[in-house]
Length: 549
Image 1 (tube, one colour):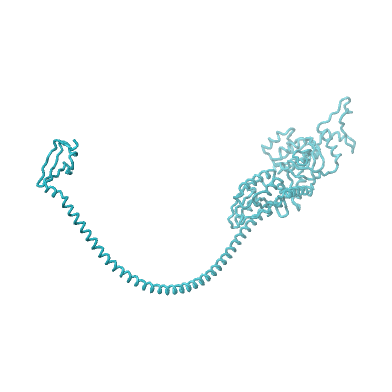
Image 2 (image 1 turned 90 degrees about the horizontal axis):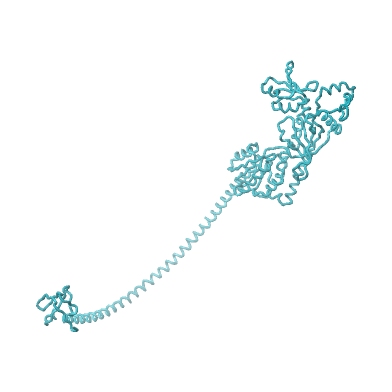
């Protein structure tokens, strides 16, 4: 705590105290109407500046007295010095009424005017008299999330027509620290936890009020009926499920079977959440070779829907690469989980090509996604489910392998026995067939031997007859050949050139040694060799005369 802000006993000034800090002194000096009281070592600020003081100093962790916060919220009027004097002069038990128009008796002839503070105070008093008791109002929360972390929560309640985003009516709401410290834990710790957030409808018990300093009309919450909000959420959930059932989508994804084993896991969650950490850790500790692909999404708030739809589309486009898709988040209140109760998200999950497993709450919570997909409630339960299925698939595969081995061994034993019997019968049959074939072969050999002797005897006789015939034919051929040879020798002797030359003829050859049979082949000047019976002469042709010439 850096300092404190209190209301002075007179109710007209705020008293600001803090240990000396140069930056805080500079801040206070910028406040209009500030005055330093050296005796009390206190800064004094007019009480009507309470909201400006709160805005300036709350972020520096100042502690504000309840009376100051009542002024900020408009539930406590600022005391004016002039009004105090008038009230002191008024009769006991009576309150001076300020005229809205007319003349002030104390100033004859001059019209009486109200200050803005007096006007707002009169309007506030009118509202309080019109609504003296707290009333129940119903509306949708707007801008509650913007006040997260603040001691006092200021937001709005709006009315919207069915299916419309634009508000038809709005009222400002104040939820002060004391009420918030009592009310919010009670809602969150109920049998069905409820967390206030933007977008949900509530039924609240409120006091109608007006904050005088700013003239802001507002209601101050004193209580909230959780059953109304939870009933609205349940009604919305039932409407979505009824629509899915009418379209035949309520059981589509739930009816999808799990791939065996489901090892390629898609994951939609916030990577910084405890749910993501628990999910991945349990898969790693399972000893199974899971392959996890994470697409980050927001798991609550206004960004949940667009990021979740985008993640669902991403995995749908790559459905062949994955076995199962998991949507997980840590536990939360029913209103936190209501972000998942969205029509478009539900349809995308119902029509998704992958088997979807959700773990987005605790056992007592039930969202639309829990009803239309396989629900394992928590991220840890989803991981344990996948691990158990993988171990079961492994055990089933091991058992099947054992059964297959037993069956194969039994079958092999039976086949070995059948093979042994077949081999024995084959040997006996072979021996019988070989004995038969040996006897047949012996008979065939004996017959072949006798036939061979007969054939050889016949062939020998035929060969001898052929030899005799061949001797006779050879002698006739030789005699005929000798006669022809003698004839050829006689013809050769008669045609021998030497013998011709002996009879007085001459043989003429040209320069190349070729015989010249006639004069037409010679030309003038050609060299000739003339052979006689007793020698040879060389001559040259002087002139050629043929018979035709």
